[in-house]
Length: 227
View 1 (cartoon, one colour):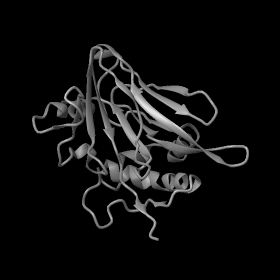
View 2 (tube, rainbow, N blue to C red):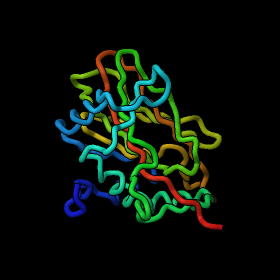
View 3 (tube, rainbow, N blue to C red):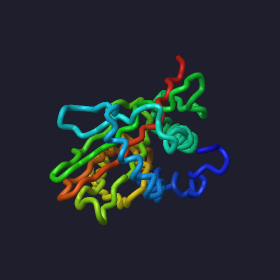
View 4 (cartoon, rainbow, N blue to C red):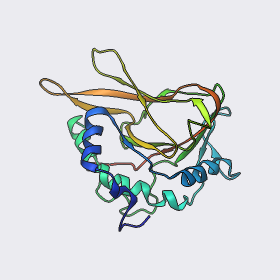
């Protein structure tokens, strides 16, 4: 992925940022074409891919160096999302700075390794969110299998908890190669007088049959404002 003519340029970023701010998620349809998605899915089977989590947790850290498809993607996404992340931090009263250049003084573009996931029949991912409030508040998720042929069930689900309200469930419609940007912990919501904090959690519902493979791509860690 080169800086000139970057594949992300085909998306309407004014709309994406507006939806992320209003809803806590925004789609990136067909981020990967089917052959690209299948190639990324096969990286799960790389013997060098390191297991993440417990023995029964079917998550693998993507082997570095990252495939060409992902090599520039975190930096390119971060550059587009950092202003919104900074706005959220300020509205939530956090002393966090998201620098415009994610690689200033560093070579590694990831805060955490990209995770490849595999869920087979009866597998699911429980609701979770980022517990570290200093983590970058937006995560990329992508589907690397075809729900029309490879599996059934396995919907990507989010819940949003607002103060003094019941949790609001959301189901993200994803097809093969589709991605979405999601708020992965907390975001501000404009109230009648001030902002208040909503907590977002994400999960994958039970796979009824077949096999579902996906990608979770963290972006970058922030730097605290110097005292």
